[in-house]
Amino acid sequence: SNPIGSPHKSTMMRKAPVFALSRAACRHFSATPRASAIKNLVVIGGGQMGNGITQISAAAGINVNMVDVSEELLSKSIANLDKSIMKTFKKKIEKGEMNQVAAESQKDEIMSRIKSFTSAEKASETADLVIEAVPENLALKQKIFSAIDKVAPASCIFATNTSSLPIAEIGATISRKDRFGGLHFFNPVTMMKLLEVVKGPETSQATFDAMMAYGKTIGKATVKCVDTPGFIVNRLLVPYLFEAIRLVERGDATKEDVDTGMKFGASHPMGPFELADMVGLDTCKSILDGWSAKHPDVELFKPSPMLNKLVAEGKLGRKSGEGFYKY
Image (cartoon, rainbow, N blue to C red; front, side, top):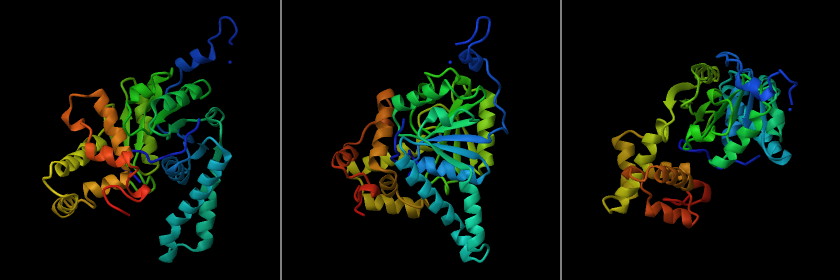
């Protein structure tokens, strides 16, 4: 999976008496988020990222409502979670630190905290935190948050797992902008330690503190980010990948030599072309295209003809069997 963006994920999708505040107004003048109060979580999107967020949160003792568009997709997600949780116990079993019975018991305990829903509104009625983990589609994300904004509790925090879209734009249609921010996980979520906690232009300090506390509860190393393209990691990583591609486009080096150079000269675990293939070339293109459209004068954000050609040919990297390399 991918440190840059989310891989393909399945998509989804009251009047008050006179002299009384309407429910919407009550939510607007709402309770302050509590930094240690994340007990009930909603994860919208049951793909690879959503599954990972669900698993580590449930393992940390948090109740999770997982949302996707159909019972069929949810059933697949639940089955994948069951297998993934057992996989985390495999090494302990092999080392004799845990037996199969104890592993099954702990797995069942974690799974008991996870419920599935096809309605994001229903799932969000008792939430302390909602994390959206659907594809990088601005209109889809806005639609989801607008819908749950009407029903979620006053103190509920909304967070997006976007890797490339502006936080402010995603939250533009909701009333609780002070309780909205970013929680950018890295793939695979169960293994990657980092969590970028993103403070949007209207995110309150209380909301930010609560998101940071949630990150620590689930065992992540948290870093503070502001609402800038790519936050921290991708803002450095995406231009690096594209500079490597441009180096080859100019004929200054081969992709094999670039990868070898970065692995043995910079101690990177894999070279930029190997990494781009793992991330997905369509994901790389989508991120850069978005940045380029908003910042056309930034040279580092210029599109790559080589990458565009590969994507047009359906050569998307490891997931399609071929990208810069064949698999």
